[in-house]
Image (cartoon, rainbow over all chains, first blue to last red; front, side):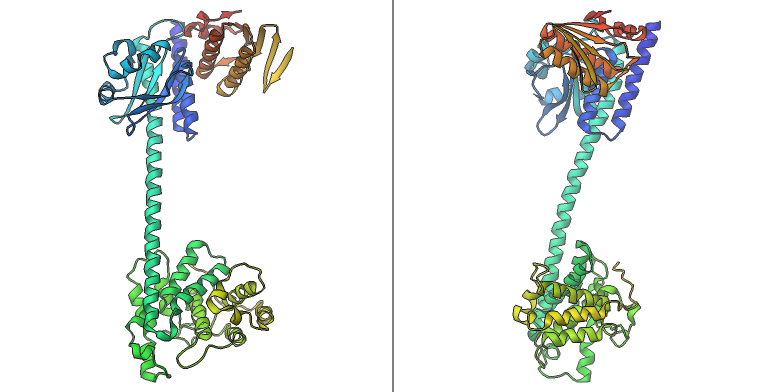
Length: 420
Length: 105
């Protein structure tokens, strides 16, 4: 009676520990190793192993083994009949000596007999074979009782759950990875589409070829300088690429007019931000505020912009970035009615309009990025590629930028920096 | 000669080694003892004594580890002796059949 009580305490202690081990998010291999220890130790079993079943390879791969020796095969093949029988059997231990009719036991008879493997317990979870447990002889030399088999069934079910959980996690990870790849593909497609749109917009205006692409790149430079993360930088670049999408609906002769356009034509042209917003709004962009950048990139901090004459705080931050990039490109490229302005003039213009047209901290960021490139503080050649080396490195530009940065230091508009 | 191999005290005298188990034989301490025992067996030990004087509790993992030690000793043709085992642990060893393979002092 006392021995039975001690046996109960010992085995239930092992069962509790096993449940705890499986439910904890420990290392999977360690969990299996510990589970095998607990199984063997609960009933005093000399040797054993835990194998995981691979449905694709139709094989059992040993994850942990004790006392089975180096010659025991680490991978055991199963045929359909074996799998079917194991599934029918469920988690009830199979006596190896009684099951030699199955191909599995015939194929591995030598190894199983040599290591005195007496029981094989299929690990069946939700009608799926996830593995098996192999158990050798008991240390007391007795054969397994029905009580022992009940304990083994209960314990191996925990091990099966542990393996099934791991399989599920692996499947989830695989699907998450697949989703991530699909998302990357979609994102790439989106970016390619955006660039194609930008080229289409630029094709309409023969004098400003490449404008949208450049505005996208300048916007990205500003975002990088502001310390935005990769995703935010991409969003700002896309906003730059698409800021003029509304121009697709404007008459080509207005856009390409070699002379200054009249008031009526100007009114027509000035509709492009609102139209761009209408075009972009229904699209499910992966980034926020892309349509707002199109709508408000001609607004000014002093309220003298269009279409809504918004003041500083009411202008979305992304639109302020695109506004600066757009204006800078307009000043630094040839237009039908005027040549591009020299670099020193452009910098003076940016400085003069900081706080009026442009957010001062954005001008600071932009000039800072340019200076870093001129002084070779950075190896990047973003401005050089967009403006040409001679233009960027014209005499006196670096000191001018330094002065501008010094002068603007401490200047700030009322803008709240909040990208989202 | 007495040495301490990673927290496990081992005493060797010719072909006899004494490995001292700790107060609670669980996975962490048990595996250290198993490694120490196997090192002694690999070194040619023919009588391996596991001293349980300090051991109060042996759990299932401890039993599995001791079975591993017994198996390894059997492969090397060495005898295993469990010494200074408390009464509860002796009953546990008897119940699970470990005493069929070792001498208990």
